[in-house]
Image (cartoon, rainbow over all chains, first blue to last red; front, side):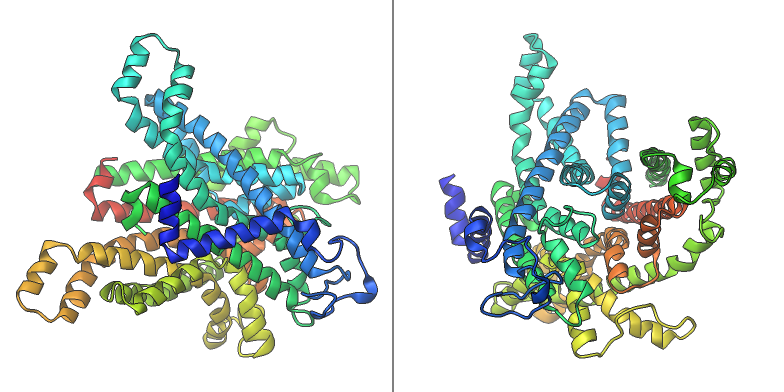
Length: 278
Length: 313
């Protein structure tokens, strides 16, 4: 752990990433204390106002304070990405380990299954399913998890294939250890490293994905504030009140930048082989 | 190589068939009776019944699935609920716009990203390299739909240099290019950064190769060594990545088409979803899956032709 921190502190871009992430995390945790207004209370008389002393980022079409909505939106962005990535990881680990461990026809069938999910443009698949089932937070997490998990499965499968021929696995088998126990006790700890990197690299992708869906009105249902829905309102009133797009966009950009910088540093550190690739 | 191509083709066909089955299953999830949902609350029972028979909804589910796939393979993607036009025609009308948008974006990204990456590699460690590195990563982290929104705000609303919506008059090439500038640039932005980084890494890799050392030891000028010898070798992996990029851009085009009100496959599917016009959603998604799979197939084949190890996987 200390080596990771030392490495992070040696790279200026990594420091920038960590600072941004800590800032975003603090904003999410202390949102009720930072926000200057209730993000959901409307003031129709005060609609579409430019930034002022009272409304630092202006107001939206219902007179809600954009700054407070941006602050609370941080929670949704982090919550969705955390839960969706956890779900994708869980699916990926389960399918990946079974696929790699079983081998043969089961493995081929799983590979084709992963390819089928991957063959859909993720956003279109998500739009279709959410349009049918109706937008909700659990649905959003499930859909994003499903569109992301093939990448984890392939990674876990490859790791499993690499590890399963090792002596200690063969020894466990010879001693009569049950297959589920081998998977959980012996394979799982060995495949977690790359999965962790993949998860870190996925955070900005999922945050963007959620923002895109909310932008289309298919993310977290209103009136819950999310960055995507702020951009959606901003897009409707772009000509008369561009502040929502400017501020909502800036925060979204800053957050994805922070997580990308950190994800890349972690990847370089935990998997030096990948360093050259990108 | 022939074996590899056949194997990849087979996998692509199976994937597309599997995707069709999955899509069929997803559309079964629509709550309530499909015909009543599509026709809306004002439809009489008679109309609903005749619609069910026309769409084959009165048949058992496995017959419906078989018909769905069989018809799709023959190019029959069903009928638009509103205009009664074949879905295939509606898709063919808008598809060129999406393909032009994605192709233009990837070409723009390559024309900007590759030289930037090569330049950064040639001056590795210098301030130019560092600045380009920061620019690349910033470009990657800006979501394309946000780039679209900001481009719209700056170049269309404030400066009024470019039009805000549409794809331009049909037949008027200049007008169409004029309408393409903002959406294509927004879509290309992230890939400029991505290609620049891949190109830089690939160039640095290439510069350690023996033939580059030989070129140097022959006394060739450094600029010739870098930009003539190393550049060529470094381009190969970048070109393969561009294949994958084209597939991704087809997906990324959805939000850009919606923001700029551009006709296209994504915009068509999105508006069809909003009006519950499911035959168009279904047909549009099948075409999207086929295009996406073909782009990935081409990328795989180009990887295979470059790197023999891929073929044996």
